[in-house]
Length: 125
Image (cartoon, rainbow, N blue to C red; front, side, top):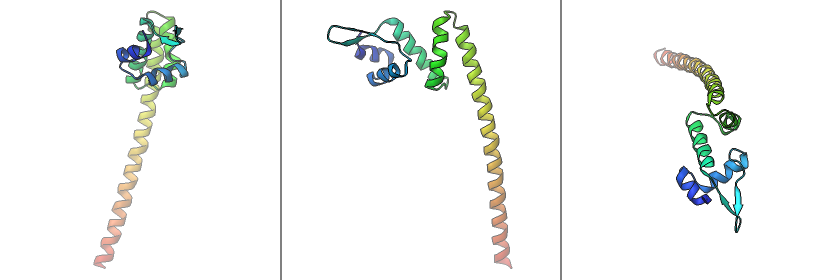
């Protein structure tokens, strides 16, 4: 299938497909006739896997790392293990960010209370 049909079936734009090709996420495709790009069902499956991994929150760089694991192992176990590692790391980083934000929030509340108390003391004094 040509790039327009391929993009339509995958639910992306031709520009996205070219971008993924540039990143190496989609392998080289055959050009026939007048230089048109042609895609197979295997590439469509790969593109759908890219989308599924994006939905899990993986970056395109992480997808580039994980995708070959799915291709090399038909069971998908190696890929899933690596995705699990990435998601666990992301969760840990998120927990650290939440803790930092909670501390910032607490500091802000304390500063607001101090300034309010100071202003109230100025008014009544």
